[in-house]
Image (cartoon, rainbow, N blue to C red; front, top):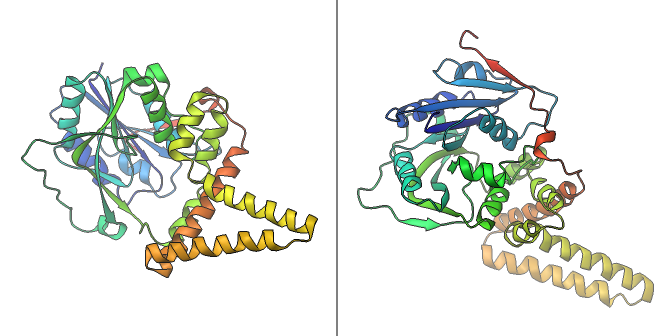
Length: 334
């Protein structure tokens, strides 16, 4: 049985798959026993065939089933056996030195279930340029308790077996949801305060990025998770940490109620008070952001989060074992 499994997930990321795989091969070269798999979500740009050139196992999820990051992690986990499992996204590059430190933490601290690290965001266009070298500090690295691990994290398999792993049906937020369940069992999620990965991404504060996320249904995840855990303790824990769409929804509900009261009573002051409150919120946001673009970005983001949460909540909850997991293994000859 391998000591370390690495699960890489990708979709239409042929532009980065070589960089990702090579960084993992380099950083795991000293492992006594390792296995590396890449799960591709029906890419049409040659991602899987490029990955299959390397000494790793490559699986391709078939089109026609729900293709999510969580599904890639779910399938990859079920096709590996290592005591420790490192998950990485297809738009990342593993930094030198972090994995060795993370494995050491797991070996020394049995109460730690997940180890993550700092994510260095890099503009997407730099993925095609020269390699970006991240220098690790020589001094001891602080260990900080965090709520979840994000897309790059090292998990203890025994804990995943105990609490249940990723739900492949969730369109997003699968890592925070899993980490809520892990922490409720008394385990720790920790961050090594040193760079773990470089993350090549679109500008976070571009409004077009928000609508791209909506198109990929990435705002549906929180609602799906709340519906799935409705009536359980996980529901309240997750809501307290990740219920970002609830406050805008509450504001909208107050607006609808104000309109109904005004229509029923003929007293339009109710609607007027709500409108004034809305204007005050916008002005406060403008003051805090000191930028019209930043304020507009925040308003659009919160509106999409609210709409996505409700769309996700209305979706039928499905258990992980209901996922069809239609997968083809891609041989190196392809």
